[in-house]
Image (tube, rainbow, N blue to C red; front, top):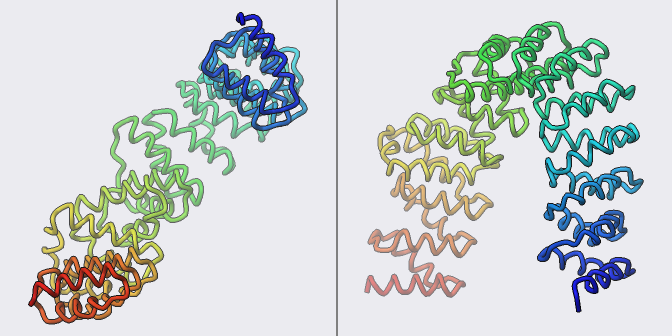
Length: 457
């Protein structure tokens, strides 16, 4: 059967009622060249009622770089079917810069809704090539949503030539101001930065929030020092945004962030109340771990986000000795994140082979062992296992005092771990514990204990 016959057969199958037949044809071309004749009928399946068929279409069209695909996909952004409209947008975004010409050709005669949608797509593609086409729409449109989409897209593609045009819309409508500022921040030209700094003290909190976020993109020392000076005047979300922007600027400009009372309070607020990305920035700005409030804030959020945890752990491991007493005080409250904090303590000990722990006073060591014994019946079996291991390391005498409690642990792996720890111990308390576990209802535990008893005979 020749190639043309194959294509004709596939054309018929693409019109079948059975979605499985259509999907099989589409998936076939994931591994083969897609003939031009099949592009239009496959694109038409963007509106297929079956999600499996639409998913297959999306995967195929996004992976084939046939230049006629975008022109056949673009019209579907006008589809009344929302799923089809969204799928067409996803395909065009994945197609990237090669889709720009097809989008630009469709723009002039498109409806307001379609223009907004396509300009959003161009912004997400992120190429500067359609800048003139977007500015043409900006000049002609009378629709605020389209206008805002144009301004936003100019920011995404970092179109410096649009700076003056964008700033004209700042005073036309207060609703435009946050979008204008956001776009200018992403463009980051000197003209854009100066405009933001000039307007900073004149605006309401919503626009100020956009300005603070935008200043994080610009990489400018003037923006850095403005944000530092403003920390004392900011509250809540404005503080979190400032912390995030300061961290970006610190990284870009290789500047040191001074750790004063204003910075401490801003980091504290952000760690405890900010959104995830703000907390990550605050954790990266941490420098002083001699402040009990900051340490407790870190302990409170530890375990919520691995990126935040990584920065906190890094700082903790750099100088763990002064932290033990603060961690002990926090663990005394039996916090919900006790398991991961116990793992942190173990890592602190393992990292310097216990050197920082051995340097503690006897009072500090006893405080930690007391907290551990208070949590021996924690409902989490992994937390209990960590406590058992830490107790035998931090204070073996106290551990032996509580051995009768430990061997009643409901988790067989914890009972096995206890046997592993006390293996070879000739203290009578250890021998008595092994005798009890020799009659353990779990065969693995009982057998291991009996093997250990035979060593004493």
